[in-house]
Length: 108
Image 1 (cartoon, rainbow, N blue to C red):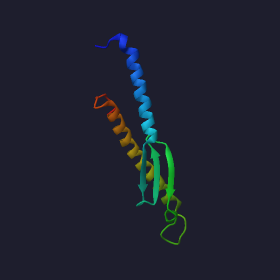
Image 2: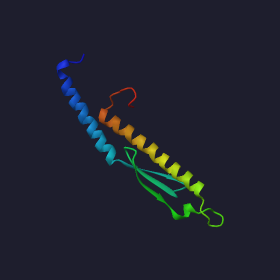
Image 3: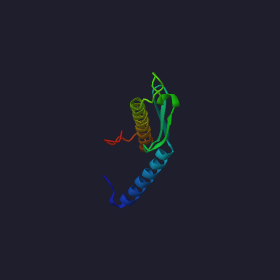
Image 4: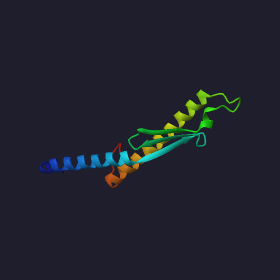
């Protein structure tokens, strides 16, 4: 049973946990790649894209040295999605670490 007199203390602790998690997520950096490293997307744990690196060779098609924009677009999407999955895993890990194994539906 929850003691009503402890609710302000519990809310304060919840706010501190949320602030700590936001700091950790901002500091967490993950990389996603596509095309064997032709495109690399760097993202933080808040799923903000920090950097996108494209190898110059990724912009050229294998025939004739003409730009293959459609393939490059696909590689960028794949690299960003890969980074997003890795960010999700980092978020999940951070949430579990902060909650110390506490099972809360929808959070892990």
